[in-house]
Length: 157
Picture 1 (spheres, rainbow, N blue to C red):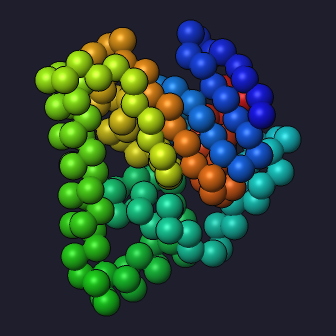
Picture 2: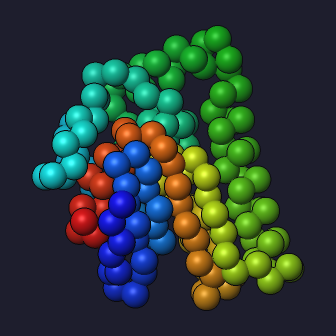
Picture 3: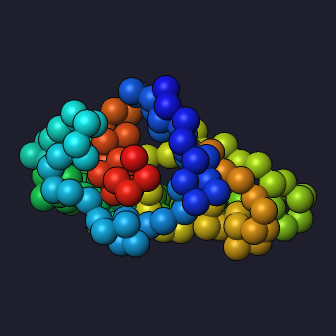
């Protein structure tokens, strides 16, 4: 596990998890390098194989997904037509809950377990909109998610 501080934010990474208070979106950091994690990460993103985290990103309208993810997500809509609505309602629940916890209850520390691929609005964006001093730790044990996050935020690594 490695600990780094970047622009006043703490970042901790491990081989199968990522913990960070990253604030930039993939667009701000230059996007994802297609198909491969940054040098040294060694994790192939397997863009030809659908992945649930990237399908979720697709349903949210994110940009970190590939044709295999989109094709499988569209097939899923054929079987479960409300999939996109369920995913978006889940995101809306996170934003409402986070806003309430930060604004009404004064919570300033948040832990996002199973964060998946960052898609705006991220938990830190919602919490820090209400309380700029809020701190957020993101965690995920999926190696592909770690590789995708590293590729999207390679300027931090």
